[in-house]
Amino acid sequence: MTRNKIQLQRLIFIDQAIREGMRQGVLANRSTMAARYEVSPKSIGRDIDYLKHQMDAPIEYDQQKHGYFYTEETYKLPAISISESDLFAICVARKALKQHENTPVYRKLVSVFRKIEQSLPDKVSVEPSWVDDRMSVLQERGTDIDPATWDKVAEALHHNRRLRLSYLKPGDTAEEEREIDPYHVVNFQGEWYVAGFCHRRRDIRIFALSRIKAAETLKAHFTIPDDFSFARFAGHHFGIFRGEKDHRVEIHFAQKHTPYVLEREWHPEQSITHADDGSVTLSFTSNHLFEVKRWILSWGSGVRVLAPPELVDAVRLELEEALQAYH
Image (cartoon, rainbow, N blue to C red; front, side):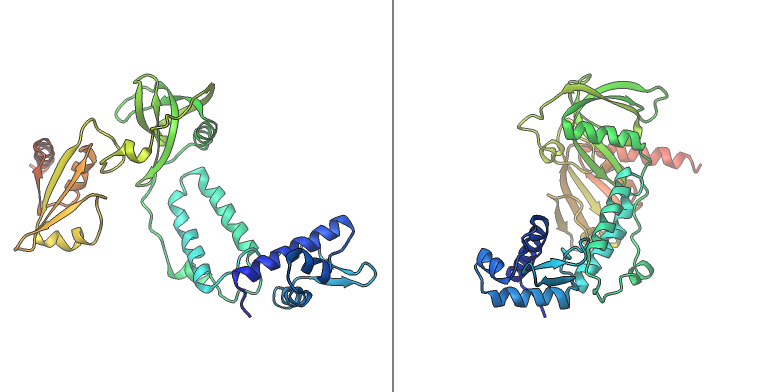
């Protein structure tokens, strides 16, 4: 017996009415519930039968108080009407959570999913354990984040409080102190970053959480500018970093790479030109070239940068220096 959304809402109402009557000492019956919900007593009766026989609700009728009550006060009405496909989606999502295993949020998310599983009806006939043996999510390995740092950033983000950071930039041996107003946190390729107004640079900067060696929440509050949007801030990005100006990037891929280039979207505003020999040229706009360069080098041979000139030079220099290691 299936229930539509309107009927499900009525079941929730009945559950609440029974609990309310138990608390107040005046039990709800079919007539009182029907009058409040503006349906017939027969409809309420059918729904109570459904709760008892299909959802195992421990409902009994008190002849002296003329109303319904729960014999088990700890009983909870299942909040989720779940199908096999719904349960499968939950199992897949639980697997996908592994990509956040390097952060404190992972433990909290796992706890949330346990609560979801505990709220499911006992009569779910689908056995989800097969997902563990038949499906895997191979996430990109992430960097380690100090739980104390994560908590401080989350606190400052939630309450709009300024942060004082001890930050170690790549290649540096000494930490530097920064004070930032954290606006936004983003995950990219296994790394978590916080974007915020840096009071030293007087501009918005991005900091990797894994490079924050100590964080302190300050008393000073801040207000996020009305015109701030992380999407607009990132702009025509390819990756996480932001540069000073936009570059029109054009990359030619040999025919052997064409199937792999076409099967994914590499940039939200990309365009692809096909050549007669089966090769393709990928074009997009990026305001930072460092990550574009690293991505191009990952393809190996059969890739040639056409524009901009500074990216052509950067890739050529990187390849020349790499070749020296094999002489």
